[in-house]
Length: 209
Image 1: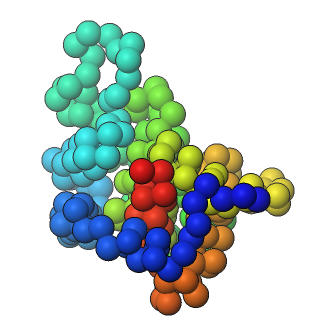
Image 2: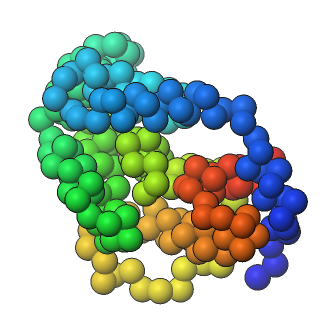
């Protein structure tokens, strides 16, 4: 395939040197590390609201929402209680016990969180699910959004393998994830070190500037 840009050592170095959002992201990592559970509604609201709004993926975003159906009441009456009542902590605890190399579990958990957010919002929340999971498990989940998807399509080949053998998963995110993994492996000799999902996100976004 012909790439949209050349992944040279200089390009990768420049992409990884961008620090503008590092402090803000560190705040989100600390928020989730210090408050990893989902048993207190105020903490649930803080995490889902701050991550969603910061990353333009708010759980209540919709263009045709009925007037007055969203806002603070939506978080208090719908978002927090439904996340609290879900099995999300069971899903997260299972991730903590299993290796990050367990692709099936990683993708299955993304699908479960995505479905939970869809039940709450009535909308497909692939991007929000990836971002919420990333800040709880920064070494395990790649951030998905339209810009990252455009970038990965310009840098990697499509996934040729049949994913039907995997358990329940979102096909779009699964293929995006596998392409990110392939890019990460390819970039190790160029970067001279292992790269994190956050590093890959920086490279993807830099490539579509």
